[in-house]
Structures are given as structure tokens and as C-alpha cells.
Figure 1 (tube, one colour):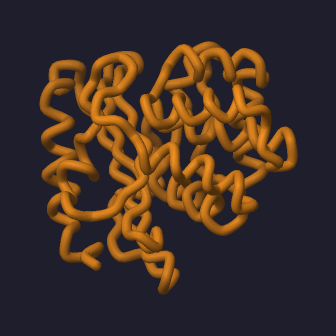
Figure 2 (cartoon, rainbow, N blue to C red; figure 1 turned 90 degrees about the vertical axis):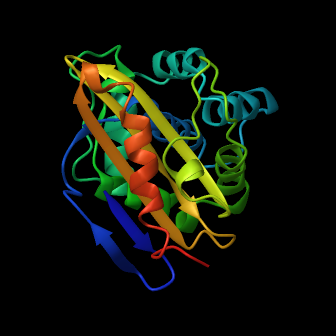
Amino acid sequence: MEVYDRQTSTVLTSLNADQQFASMSVVKLLIAIDVLAQNQFELPSTATQTQITQMLSTSDDAIASSFWVSEGGTSIITRDVALMGLTGTAAPTSAGEWGSTEITAQDMVTVYDYVLDKLPAPARSLLYDAMYHASEDAADGTDQYFGIPDGLRGTTWAIKQGWGSSGSDAYYNSTGVLGTDSRYVVVLLSSGPLSSYGTLPTALTSAAAALSSLVSP
């Protein structure tokens, strides 16, 4: 877990921020960044922009899988690591399982900072707007408002969530930026035995709520 204040360049709170977790659908943000990077962050075709938006806002697995194949699978992660200087992010050992990409809270803060500070305005807006308009119901029917949205009600957010299982563990991740000026980056990553799959969303929402005093306007 890590909370970062972009205005003051300060880590407000951090716990095991270098611990690796399976990304689940959070990796879709990394996929989107790589797709844009292949064209030097010039906006791609309207059709590709629509795919990126849907992949992020509704967490569409089919679109993610299509990009994963077309852009070279694990090479996407290798390129992202080099591009953003990530230190704890690693491609999945099984090339087809993009959700098993390993991430850390520390690296995801770096990713959000990169999107907001380094990308040209059109590319930045494409990604931010997709995450700002994240739907409550994901493409697979999951309620993706656990963590940041339900725990920090009344705030302006742009999020990329992740959920699922890898091996014998369940994972729920809530990540995003808060504030009309995107001042705060909040990254909450969690895992447990498969039996905890139903309780992790509530736990993440409670964890997000506990951060309210740190990220209040």
C-alpha cells in the first residue's frame, strides 16, 4: 500500500510498498501505455482509442487479451519496465496469463506519476478520462467500486481496479488518482487464500476509508 502526494512529492503512508502482487486487471493500464508508446504517444486510430477506453473503463478482458497478443505479450511488460524505470514489476511466467503480471504499490505510484507528468496531453486525457469514467459494473459483471470509490465517497477519482486469482491465491487491487487536480495517488494491493475471495473487496474498501484524513481536499 502507498499513498503519494504529487503536489508535495511526499509519500504520506506506505506499507510493504515493494511487495509483489499479481496485478489482475491493473495490468490493463500498463498495456494501454505500451500501445500508446508504440506510436510515440500520438493518438492512435479512433477504433483503437475506443478499445483502450473500454478496456480501462469496463475492464474488458477480451480487449486486453487482443492487445496482449498483438503487442507481443510479455514484451509489453519488459518495455514498460524500461520506459518508466519500474523496479518491482515483472512479466508473468506463463506468457498468456497477463493478469499474473507482478506489480508493487511503489511501481504503480510511478506509473500514475508517469501518465500524469510525462505523457502528452491528448494521450494523458485518453487514459485519465477512461479511468475517470470507470463503470460500476465491469464487463464481467463484477462490482468494481470496491476500495477507492466506495471507501472514499465524495472524492474525484480515476481508477484502475483488479480482481481474480492466480495459482492458489485470490487478489483484489484498487489503484488510482484522487482530487480534481489528481493530487493524490492511492495504491491498495491485497491477496489471500482463495477462500477469502468474497471478503477482500470489503477489506479494501475499509482500508481506503481509513485514508480519508490523508487525502481530504
